[in-house]
Image (cartoon, rainbow, N blue to C red; front, side, top):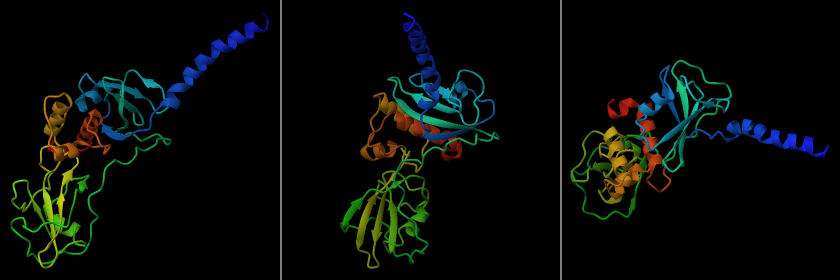
Length: 268
C-alpha cells in the first residue's frame, strides 16, 4: 500500500507535464509568411485572408503556447485547417516594425518549378513570325512560371536555346506586349525559321489568363472547390499552387496568402 501511493501520484503528474510540453513540440514548421500591420488580431488575419467559415485558425506564440486573444506579434504562427481538420498551412506572422525573435525559423521556399533559366545573351535581330508556324515542333514541354513574366523578356530567357522566341495567345494571335499568360504558347525557332519546340505556358496562380494571380482567380478556385465551377486543364495546372499534383483548399490558401503579401499583384 505504501508503494502504491507514490506510484499513483507519479502517474497523475505525468499527463500534466506531457500536456505542458506538447504545444512547443507539436508546433508545425511554417509553410508561408505574412506581414500584418501592428494591432492585427487573429480575427483580423482571417479577414485579410478572406477565409470562409469552413476554415479554422489557431495562433501559437513563438514559445509554442496558444494565443487566445490580443494582437498578433512577430514570430506567431497561424495554423489553418479545413472543415475536415486537415492542416492546410502554417503562416509565420511578421508585424510591421516589430523585430523577429532571434530563434525564429524562416519558412521554406515556395514550391513550384522555376521559369526557364535566363541568359544575358541578347536576342538576335527579329525575323520572328507574326502568326504561329505550321511546322510541327520536335518536342512539347510545359514550363511553369512561378512569377509573372513580361512578353518582352521571353526572347532573352530563351536566347541560349533558340534564335527566335515568340508568344502566342490561345486565339493564335501573337502577343506583342504585356504579361505571358496561362494558356499561351511560346514558339522557339532556329535561324532558318524551323520550329525547335512549342512550349505550353502555365503561370502559377493565373486562373483568369491575365498573367498573374487575382482576387477573381481566388473566387473561381473557391467555386471549383465547392463544386460550382470547372477548370480547363491548363487553368487547373495554374491552380496547383503548391505543385503537389492536386488542386485543393491548400492551394486556395496559398493564393490568398500570396495576394495578401503582395497586394500590388492584383492591382490592390
